[in-house]
Length: 293
View 1 (cartoon, rainbow, N blue to C red):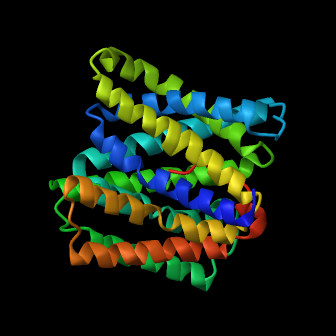
View 2 (view 1 turned 135 degrees about the vertical axis):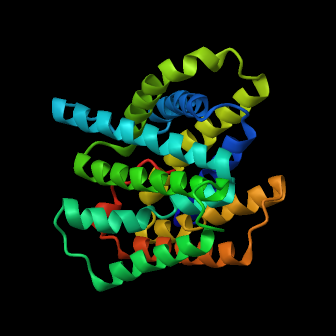
View 3 (view 1 turned 30 degrees about the vertical axis):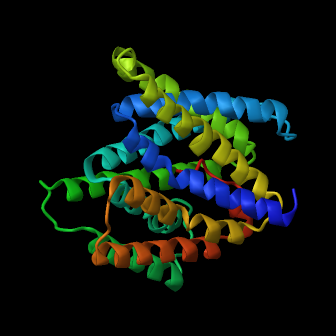
């Protein structure tokens, strides 16, 4: 893969991740069924990628690795369920921007968990995200769908931040192997909840869920990992700042979710925070990507 094709693959991956909320809204199913189906299809896609397209040997897993992967799977399940609840309640735009707060949570939690000093420019990141959230929120009435949806989306961002930090602690496990194991955990966790309603899911909804699992999870993650072998992590961070832009634009075109001026300003601040966060990452850490979105 050349740098040019890697950059193209990275943009395709960012677009696919950005479509997560769109497919979640198109699928007329509960968040638990969507997450179960997404994980199941992702397992198939990642297994095929590992078998035919990946040259990275799999690592033998020990009990400590299995515990970390189990925790990662539980965090991923919570992250996805809360995100799709936000999509159903408040729409794609608010859900996507609320989730995009995860860099601010990562800065704070990384300092607390790994006892790393929080720098002044990292505090600016937290301030940018906080102001962005205030602007994105139409009102502060907890009874309103927009506010409750944003709370679910922010919770999704918090869980994703914890997932990223746990993946950092997992260290040397190959990313595709880790992603596959985590999706297995997600599918097994959601199966008891989703099983009673699986027979009622329409064929069209299975199509959206399948696209979500294969393209927005398995293929997108594989493109992300493959591109990092050629491109710098800083470049990847800037490209993936486009993820909310892609998602909000498609939702606007498909569902007529017209963002207000306040939401656009808030979204701009949050996206700027994603770019700043990515540019501030140390290269050693950035080479251990988490399961994205």
